[in-house]
Length: 243
Image (tube, rainbow, N blue to C red; front, side, top):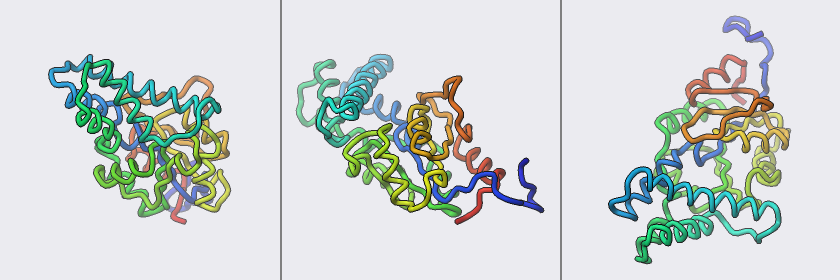
């Protein structure tokens, strides 16, 4: 039963910290990559830019999976981005090293989703907010400054020398919060990310974003939200209170 405003009762979820995925959840990674490719390869049509952005994402995801599986030594996200940029440049026939270097920094220039800055700001007034990303530390620093993301703490998979959904990445947030994992709410647009968080004992909230990874029929996430405004409203209705 949902607590009423007059008699809130006990919270349906006890959440001390809200943890956000970043790429795709708080920032529009697909559009950011398409725009970066279009700038690097003048005259590229939208479909070609999307294909090249897909090549980028496939390279990064594949190498992250290799690292998690132990098939490659860890390298931070900006190194994988540089590899992906080089692969895109080769496919597109771009040979200018400066253009390729600029393209490699695309991850730090992704635009925020329209509700991200205000949504984080609203939640941060009630609860500690953490960004937990597969992006490298340097990328997160620049991305937060550019996109206006005002979290209280940013944690990179680089700090665990692995990548989500490896459990050690989620443990970064649990250890930083110093509370049981079921008192952290992981928010992401990717079901695979939330499955990893749930396996680590965290509560989960899926946010619908274009290009995200929707829940499967067997997924049982705690919350499903249309956007961050909807998420904040649902948290209020479940009785989650400031720490």
